[in-house]
Image (cartoon, rainbow, N blue to C red; front, top):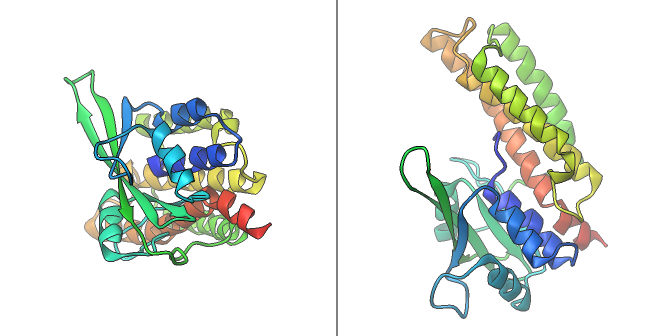
Length: 260
């Protein structure tokens, strides 16, 4: 939850490119991020893996007008619409991109290569058929913002009752990293997204920070197995809310264009 999902980068900058608000080179640079390379396998009309620039241009010619994000978890097919084969691949990866305007979806497969200390990441996106249907359980931006505010309050209160502290070197490093990202607010989403989507995604990341710190931090009173279960129970609903909000934010560009 702390790190931006690769599907989010692909959808956000892919949408900016499709809307004519970003150049192909700029979009691909942001999508790849710190990874070494991204390739796409199974693109219609191609027998071998191809690059992102060709992929985005081909998808546009195939009728794709926008890209949506799915962030499914066991028992929660968030953002998916089927068929079962695509849903299973997306659930295994815990993320996917679903095309709007043509029945395709993309699921990332991540590889790490290189010696310890010099590991680089390669990503292969698999293009698969999807069912053209409304995505599962995706809220509006307004709903997501309200849910996040309530979830943040409830989680904070529950963790305080459990005496789960957010302190120590790991917590401080995570907070510093979050602040550094927050200072780059213009990079939260690509051009073309409404300000509310940026606000919702930023709040979802704050909630994700709270969840990660509570899960990773061993200090505080939650030390017995019963207390650890109580901690997990307190975090589960707000983690679900944060994922729903992320999807709503990344999908806002498509929803905004549809509403016009």
